[in-house]
Figure 1 (spheres, rainbow, N blue to C red):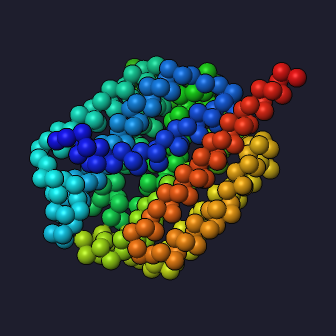
Figure 2 (figure 1 turned 135 degrees about the vertical axis):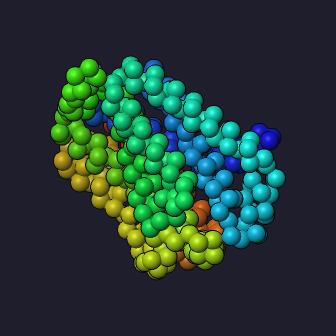
Figure 3 (figure 1 turned 90 degrees about the vertical axis):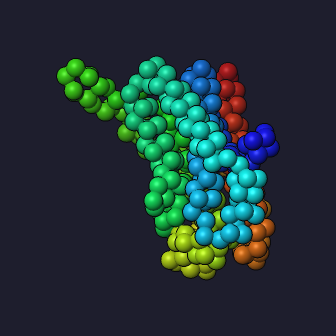
Length: 321
């Protein structure tokens, strides 16, 4: 396998979807909780990226194995097109998962058992999202699983690692007695969940856009996604509603003190997002329609990150006055 083949199997270009929850999680830790731990953060980033590559490789491998269309299997899927060894792909996936487990155990030893629980749930969903007799991605709830796992899961774990001294949420566990208790800060946890919603929506929309584009091919390959059940027209309305809901979430968060006024910079992107949504609808089901989704995800989440960074700068300047 060449490096080019490897990067295509893991779809390295799509990793930005997991980088945004991580980056925004770091910035939210700085602006809302005013705490950061760079060592834990760096280690988690490595494990997160490697696991994301593993789940994508599983997705491509399972699509190859379960494909009903010979055209897709041997002309479109990289494993069949490049005649890659199935054994080598399996070993590569296993190696990446074991690496992630090693990183997770180190961080759990340093920061507490709750990380092992959260990481385990995220990894379980990540693996069985495309693996098994009935992968989650082939079910109507694929958008929910992808959005919540990456948008909330990665975001919450990043904040957990950066706020260990505050104990925003923490699991006490005594293995000898078998006693455990989960403690935390209610308003802090609610702020984390609320701030994750734009990430949940934009990541879920990636899956939804893929299913809107590939509806006919998915049916041919026995993939009965949400779009199959609600129809393409209703799927488009849901797609657009989730994107606009991101802005509503930011506005409500500002009212309730989750954000500071620099977050309003994010609304500068609304006209372009609106235009991309119209172009997306016009271009369906052409493959280029998916590009508008990626543009919206990058544009919105980049502005989300930049707005939080502007908030951090404003907080630093205000504290110096």
